[in-house]
Picture 1 (cartoon, rainbow, N blue to C red):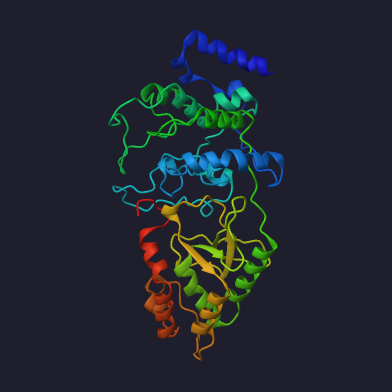
Picture 2: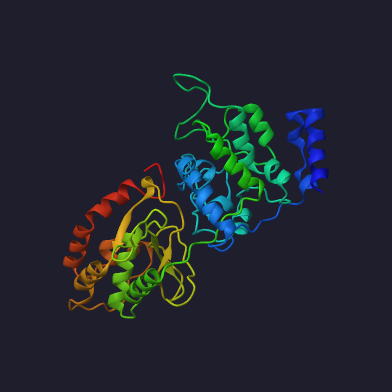
Length: 395
C-alpha cells in the first residue's frame, strides 16, 4: 500500500513538477478527509513524546505568533485543541464589516474538532490515510516546514519581501492550494519571516508529523488542585442571593484572568504552574462543566441558575495574553469579609437586560459601595492589566 502511494507521488512529481500538484486529488491518493484521534492518555509513551520533544519546539518557535485570538489565519499552536482546530482565513477584526460576525474563541464557541470544521476551519495536519507519505505530502505543517527548509531567509541587512503590518492581507493556504501558495511566495515557509528551525528541530517535527502527529490528553489535576477547586466552587456557588450576586461580580472582573492556587502550586521544570479559567456553567459543582458561551461576560446566560466553575487552562502561557491572579486562603477571607459578612440585603438578582447588565453601577447596586471600592483597590493591578493584555494581541 505504501509503495503504491509513493509510486504515484513520484510519478506525478517527475512528469509534471510542482505546477500540476495544484490539481492533485488527495482524496484519490490518500482517501477521504476525516478527523483523526490524536490525544492518547497523558502518561502514555506517545503523549510524553509530544510533551517532552514536540511541545518545547512549538513553544519556542511558533506560539510567539500563533497564541492569540487574532493570530495569523486564526491558527493557535499553543494548545492541542488549537492545533487540531486548524486555521481559518476570515479576519477576526475587519474595519469595513457592517454587521457582527460570529466569534470563534477557542474552548468557547465550539467544543469539538468537527464543530470547528463545520464553521470553516481547515486542518493543518493530514486527516487522510495515516501513512507516512500522506502525513508529509497532505499535511499543511509538513509542507510549510519543508518549504522553509528549501527557501531559507535571504541574507539581507533589512529583510524584504515580507509583510508584517497589523492589517496585512492574510494568505491562509489549505492543502488543496498549497502548491499555488508556494509558487507565489517561495520564501514564505514557516516560521514566516523568521530564521528556519535548526536541523535537529526540523527533523524532530518532521519525524513526529510522519508518524501521525500524535499529541496528548490533558494532564490530570493533582489531589491538591482538585481540593482547591472544590473549596472555591463551593464558595462561589452558595445558594444565597448575596453570594450569587457576589460571585457574578467576581466573575465579571476575573473572566479574562489566569487563576492559580498560590498556596499549593509551586512551579518546577517538569511541572509548571497550572492555571485555571473562571467560567459560567449551566451545571453545578460535581457535574461536568457545561459552559455558557456568550459574546460578553454580562450577556444573558439563558438559564435559570448560573454556576461559576474553575476549568484548567490547557494552553501555553504567553506574556502578551497573561493575566495571573492568585486564589488562596487570604484572598478567600478577604472576599468574605468584604461581601459576605457585612449585614445588607439582596432582595433579587439584577436583570441581564443590556441597560442593566452592561452598567456595573446598576447591576451591582445592591452590593455595598465600600466593598466594591475596596475590591477595586485590592485588584487595581489586575484591572489595569486587563486594559493592556487579553486574548487579542493588538491590545
